[in-house]
Length: 83
Image 1 (cartoon, one colour):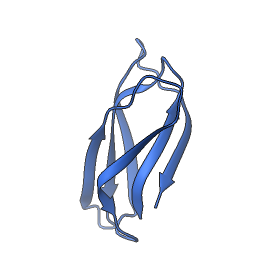
Image 2 (spheres, one colour):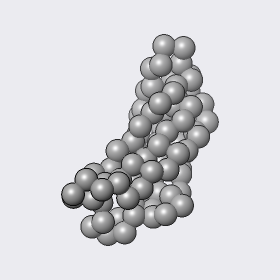
Image 3 (cartoon, one colour):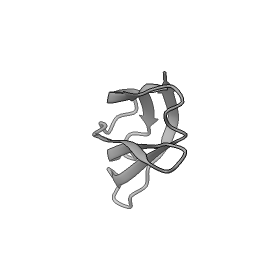
Image 4 (cartoon, helix red, strand yellow):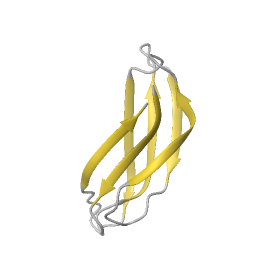
């Protein structure tokens, strides 16, 4: 089960946008949601609009399509997933 998650990026090397995707065991996508973090060093929390229920998803994927860095680098210090 997932209701929210948090990231801590290095300032200057943060994601401009990120999305979370969740899939069931048979590969069916049950969640796709986009978020827009700030370019800061502090931990940032994001609450899902549609929380994932227990044992519903077997694969959770985070995508970072764009970065605040000119070369596209992202430095992630911490990731936490909350039930």
